[in-house]
Every structure is written in structure tokens, then in C-alpha cells.
Length: 364
Image (cartoon, rainbow, N blue to C red; front, side, top):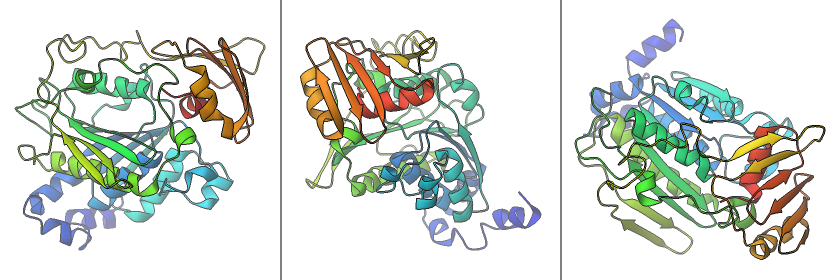
């Protein structure tokens, strides 16, 4: 940050945040807390873009953005930080997002990380952060993020969206927040209290097989950003701790009260961090002598290959029987072979790219 930027930041952005500072729950003290905060956003697709944009405009001092993928033309309908030029040059999402956020607010710091968020690097990437934000599209990495939140007592804003609906829930881990920038007395259930196990591979639709409505992303990320800002300014007692189920297409917004943490929860109750310790989670292995990567799902089958074939039929040539499904995907120009137990062979040699394709087309 150069001296002019430092002066603008100290002065509240030369009027940049005037309307926000007027809010009684924020004020000058809250704005300073935002400027001092560091947020880790894992995944910079539709959800990550929306949250990062709002947090940057609100003046959150440091945004660390992790994403393993590149910008594609089909992203532009809902991933609001990217342009046609980014898609044309297949720009890494984290880098393209950082460039755009720097234009939106030059007074904040953006730290782009073009990498796969995994057990071996999760704790180092979360070093020094005050809050975790979910911009993900797969359960494996969400359970990893949940383990990280519970182990280190970090607040975590979970979200997901597919089709016309989405979910949002803030997670305040049991025993967390002590001596940290964000503190709380009453914990919430963690993700594994609500969803003890991930669904089997292929059991749920993905954005690429079921589509996604742009306004749904805007509403979901609005709820996420509001929860994040509330936590960062210390407005914890009045935080809405519900799980919101939102479907603007159907005109539905439901709140589900998640209750209290489960003592039997393997993560926050028994403090077993199976994803963070590398005991669980989908594994990727490049096959020797072939431009192919094998993906082993976190929750092995059985996969309903008939249902998966129906979802993939619009996207390529599908062949399957009761044992195996093979599809030549038109958009990605890659062959994907899925077995009845959820194991898959992806026709690329790069494990990170293979995981992206698996999450995109097979999902969980």
C-alpha cells in the first residue's frame, strides 16, 4: 500500500464508506475493524465472486482468494468479476478476480492463490485469517473447510447454490472465537452436525448438469456477505444463525433453526478432523503412461448410472450399462468414465483439472 492509499484508508477511504459508516451497527469503529480484517474465500466461481465483490466494496482490508480453475465463457452468466477478455485468455480465476477487485477498491489488499485447496495446504492458507467464506461447488472441500473452522475456532459462512435454489448458514464452532478478532459465547452446529456424511458421488445435480439462476447467486451471496460483515464488526449476538433455504424463482425463503452442536458429531463433538488430517476426501492419481487421472470419491457409490446418464445426455455422447458409464463431453472435449462405485477416470493428466471436471459433471 503506497502512502496515498494508507492516508485514504486511515481517513475511511475519502468518503468511500460514508453510507456504510452511518449504519449504527457499523460506525467508525466497525469500519476500522473491517479494514483490519483478513478473510479467506475458498473458491471463486459464482459464490466466491459475489461475496468477494461485496466484501471488497465494504472495505474488508485483506481478501485471500483461493481457486484452482480458469475462466471459461460459460462462467460469465453468473461469475460477476470476470469479463469476456478473461474467458478468451483462460485467465486463472484467482488472478482475474484480484485484478478486478483492485479496480473496484484500490485501498484493500487482495492475495490471489491459484491452487487446489487441500488437506496439505489448508492450514497454511488459513494462517492469520479472521473468517472463512465458502465459494465452493463440492462437498469434499466444504468438509475440509469445516474441519479447519472447528479445529482453529474460526467462523465459517457456508453456502451452496444449484438450479434456482441455495442454502446459507453461518457456523460458529464450539470452543472457538476466544482471543480472536471475532468472538462468541453460544456456538452453532458445524456442517457435519447438519450433514454428518457427504452424499454419494453422482447423487446430486451440479450447476453444469442442472443449471443455475443468476439472481439466486446474487441473493445467496448477499446473505453470505451480510453474515460475514456482521461477524467482522462484532455484531454476533444479533446474528441470524438460521440455515436459509432460498429459491427466488419459486418465491421461497425458509429459515431452519439448526439447534445446538451435536455431542455425537464426529467433528465438533469428537474433534476428529478426518478431511483435514487427510483420512477422507476424494483422491486423484495420474495413471502412468496415460493422459488420464483416476478420481476416488470421499463417499463411494453406489451411483445411479441411469440418473447420471440422463443428466449428462445433453452434454455429450453417453454410453452406459449397469457397471460403467462413459461420456465424451462436448464442451470440455474430454472423456469421462464413471464406475458404479463412484470411481472415475478423467481424460486429463492434471489432477487438479481432473477434480474440477469430476465436481462439475459427476458431483456429489
